Structure formats: structure tokens, C-alpha cells
Image (cartoon, rainbow, N blue to C red):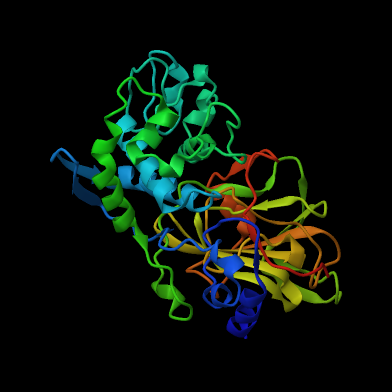
Length: 392
């Protein structure tokens, strides 16, 4: 039943910008949706290591941590309007050159940078992170620049970039598509050594080929999809916007007034409050489904374990993802609604170890056990492809 419903919804999808959307039927039916499709920019399993050769013949071996940072750059690029494969290659070239794909602190200038997850220390002026961005140049705060996701968004730039309009990201460089990739990287980095980026183009291409897989054509066994380990876990609603209204477990059903088991955790919030993906993952369902109302299901890997998260009761016009879309933790995937079997605006959240269709556990307790980070409202970008239809 779900597969038939998803097929119908896919045909009705409308694209408002790029995203990692896999709509095999809709792409054929609507060229506008094709602009939304990611091509091969879907991150698959991350290998333990990768060896490649630079343009000047040097052999480079990257470990799993470096490749995980590369996966973040690819994923953010796939979700950013106008980047595409060429832009991702340029970003990888820049990060390889600047940090060798490592999140670097700079304790000489910013001792507090060592308090954040990192891959070592550096001492290039006041530069930080994958792209060696400088707080004093306006790229962001120390806290922001020690976040790989933030650095990738800042490098790509554009109107949705956290640094817009200055310093300029790739999308802010006029005619960057016509530049040599090394020149485009230099236009963003403004390095004293402008010719060094070109040397890493073959390595960037090898990384992109190794970490991405072709978009599936529909059908198949979802269990075969490998979801990379998440980079973090976040609370799915903005700080200060919600209250706990109904916990996991047995309760008196608010609609039937009979005893029933409640498989989720309910958080009351105003209609239209942003809902965030709890972890990096792949959307396996997005649409209107009976008593769930508007429902999004995302598959994750957390601590090496397959986890499915369910987000229910959104209005149809408040769903901003589609099946097959790759999302990152904290991505704005939808808005709180009150559709389906609901007595008022709230998020019904379920966590299911083992993946979609497996028994649910206490989502509230799971978020606590994972040390889920809080997110301030308005700090994340909304997914850019959405389903049509009015609220219910």
C-alpha cells in the first residue's frame, strides 16, 4: 500500500530548487523535477581508506575520517542550489589542499577550538577547519567554523549560505562554472599559492566516484541501501518551541478514550514550527498516510546500528523532502501540523532500531541517551523540494 501511495505522490512532486531527490517516475513526467535530481551525488558506504594520485604524480591515501568529511562536503553540495557535481569537485579540491580533509584547530590563536571534535592542530594565521576559514575575515565564529557542515555551506555560499554576501562562496563568484576548477577554488580561498589547487583535481574526482553511487531507478530492496554513520544527533524541534505532551507507552487514547499503546513521543508545538532530521540519513517515505497524517520516515546509522525515525502529523504542504533524498542532521524537513489522527498541532516522533517497520522504543529516552544537540530556530536551511497539496 505504501509503495502505491509513494508512486502516486512522486508523480505529483514539484521542485522548487535542487536537492538530493530520487523521483524516477516524476523525472520522466516533469522536466522541472529533473533539475532537482542529484544524479550520482548520493553518498553510499564510506570505505576505510582510499588511495589516489595527484596531478603531479604523488600518491595520497585518505582514511575513513577524512572520507567522512568528504561525504559531508558532497552531501551539502547535493542539497545546495546550483552546485552540482562540478561545484562539489571544486570544494573537495579546496579542502584537500587547505587541510588534507581534516578538521583542524588553531590553538595558538583560538585555544577554545580544541574543545570541539577535531583531527589535529594547525597554525596558519587564525585559520580553522576543513577549508581553513578565518573568523577575522568574517567566515564565522570559532564554534561555527569547527562544524564541518557549516564550513561546507559557507564554502558553497550563495543566498542560502551563512556568510552571504561576504566573504564570497563559490556560488557568489560570477561565471565560476567557466573557470578552471583550480581557479574557482582560488577565487573562494584567495590563497597566496593560487596554483596548488589544480594538483588535487584527480584526487577529488576519485573521492567523488568512490563515495557516491548511481541514483536507484525505483523499487528494489530498501534493506540493501547502505546509510553512512551519522555525524551527530539533534533534537527535532527548535529550542524553546515545544512541550512534552504524551510520552511513549500505555495511555488513554485522546480520540477513542480507550486504553492504547502509544508508540511515539509527542511534542506540542505551534502549527508551522520547523521539524529537523534527528540524524544524517536517507528518506524512505514522505507523504500523507492515514492516521499518521503527513509522515516522513528517515533511515539512519547511529553507533553502527540501523535506526529509523518517524515524524508524523504534518500537513501535506508542510513536507519538504521526498523519498530517496539524503538529509543531514538538523536539516529542516517539514513543519509541525495536525493532520491524521491528531487533536492539535504537535510532532509525533518514533525511533525504531533495526529500521523501518521494526518495533519502536522510547524516542524521548533515545534522544537523551544519544546526547541530542539542541538547535536554535532559524539556523538551518529548509529542504528545497516539496509535495503539492493543501492541509488537512
